Length: 255
Image 1 (tube, rainbow, N blue to C red):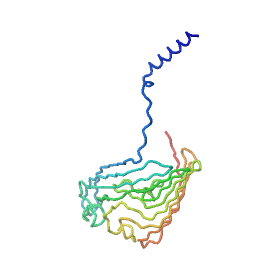
Image 2: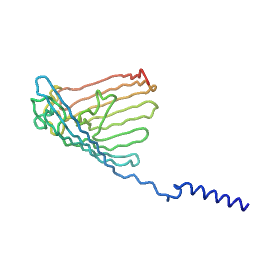
Image 3: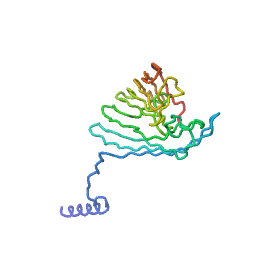
């Protein structure tokens, strides 16, 4: 019996000696900070050549800098600024004479210089639902009707209440109420939207809009969906726009 005890202790000592990780003192996991910085930087060059106008060259930088809180009982918040500078500004930003660069003789490249609040919202996540109140990005489907115009330096955001629910398996239901659409033309824009008759302001659109979007994933290759976008704009002679649609997304070939 005595020899068995000695053998057991010796074996344990050998196992302990062969595993240096066991010799490290146990430490408590590092606490997540209450506030985290966020940063996204993009450089972009674009060339444009429109008939009847001079060629344009744009080399721009865009920075998004913000602060995001950690989750607390499902609640979190984000505030984010967006800043854009033109290093090569041989173009017309299309945002009116108070926005830079402005040169009506040049081909349009819709990336004005700007400094503005991009997002600022409070979020709740729980019960298979994400709800947001405040200025935010909203992107539905392929962004053909509702999106952030992400290929431009100054993205489009919305002053809105939104939620996305995924309680039912395979089903995603989204709803948003829009109070204002903050367009891509920046904080200094002041002209009317020439290519959309009846809209008086290129910087933002005061809205009274309800967005309903739903999709159901039938399989890995098939998704069915539909949406109803009921939009009224206060600073427009256009009384209302209603868009109704159904969609089918089918993957025809899979590697």
